[in-house]
Length: 154
Image (cartoon, rainbow, N blue to C red; front, side, top):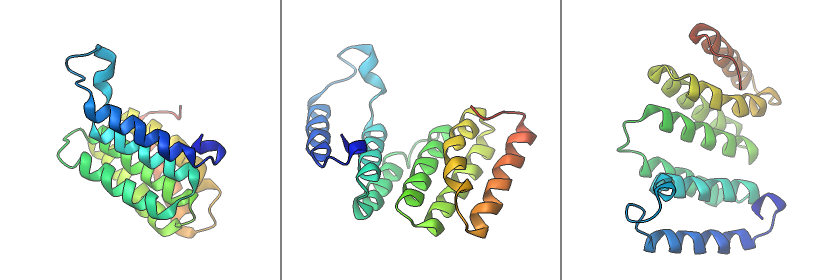
């Protein structure tokens, strides 16, 4: 619904968060265990990005980062930084988008994760249309890193 610009998506998101708050994933079906606070915060982020709600995008982005602050899984952190970068680029904040994209690339490089680099493919598409010099340079850095780690875009 958010992709269609329908603000009712926020209400549905709240209902999902309420259900998640009452759930006990470790006692229920195994497939529900993939939900965690970070993933729920990422759902918020994607919803607000699609609705173009800049204030909520910034708050949701910070919530996602807080939810994974203790997470040592650099792959997950790289993906979250990439998501926030895409959100910032989509709402027109190129400087913040590039800053988060740098964080995503740095984290993916530290983890040596081809998965993290593959997740940057969507971010590359958002960067390629930017006229900003920093965005262009970052695009080159992503391409160079991908070559050096021997992965190809998904």
